[in-house]
Length: 199
Image 1 (tube, rainbow, N blue to C red):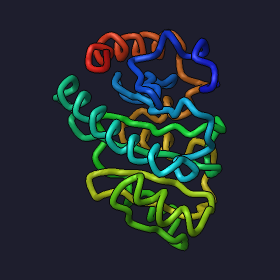
Image 2 (spheres, rainbow, N blue to C red; image 1 turned 90 degrees about the vertical axis):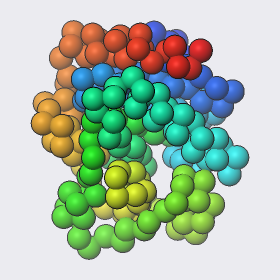
Image 3 (cartoon, rainbow, N blue to C red; image 1 turned 45 degrees about the horizontal axis):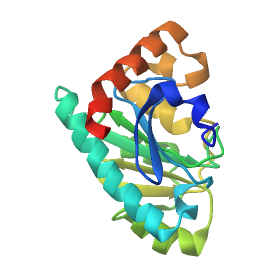
Image 4 (spheres, one colour; image 1 turned 120 degrees about the vertical axis):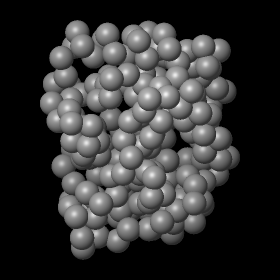
């Protein structure tokens, strides 16, 4: 899906040489939910090159700045990635959702037996932890920092589920089941509001 621009062109908010900025299908928030997707096919952030991970770090900051400016009433932002654990599309994509503060406690409560590692940045994760472990993971960044949970027995779309719960919209957790008219309205508004930041 993410290797073919025609599959998401109408949802494209911007691009760099290496990444797409896409309004996601299944807008859990009331707009502003984006995906950062590498143009090169790669399964997860951990499998990116060191240069790509550094560029993704920088782009993530730029996107978060745009979300804070545009959605000032909901400046808290969650970023996350599933890899194998809960991933439904086998192409790396970093989710960025405005309006959520903390999901770390829910993950710790759901998977108390699993290793959790703190990381400084996506490039740090790629260069040090993933390079050594190469195991399935859940990666997220909330107000308590950036962390990775290794090998959790999570269901598909697990991080979407807990973000939807945190926002009080559990019915929007599965992007395939969301009301298509509402979803289209929300992603179209997201594109309209955010495209000027990336052109």
